[in-house]
Amino acid sequence: VSTQSTGIQNRSSNNPVNSITCSPSDVVEQIVAKQNHINKIVKEAEEQEGTLKEIAIEKAVVSTQSTGRYFLLSLRQYFEYFVAFERIDTEGDRRVSLEEFVAAKDKVEAWVGPVDDMEAEFAKIDTNGGGQILFDEFCNWAIGKALDLDDDEE
Image (cartoon, rainbow, N blue to C red; front, side, top):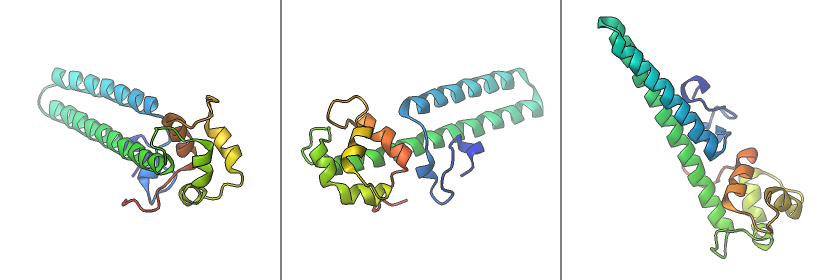
């Protein structure tokens, strides 16, 4: 996957899904910007005639396809994060306690690599200091760590 066609920064050419490096709000912002760009292209196409109009319409279609692909890749990545989060959240309360996080050390290390100090890592993830890891905090951490479930199908 090229960054030119999707707007995604690749960290691994073998797995483009793991290369998403932005938050959900960044994704929305980029999609809105892309849609504004598409709207401009369509408006320009309407002003053209003949072959130029066909070329401008084709350009708008290609832009729309890459935006859709980017959205789907982002959605898939956040679904993977949600699955990982649920596997750690053994109490099912949509929050991960320190005890749950420490108990999931083997899972976490399988997804992100070695973690020397689980308590220190928990403190890094818990950015609001609430004593629990919330899903958005988990996602921000997972993005930085290039979290990859070991049993998902690419």
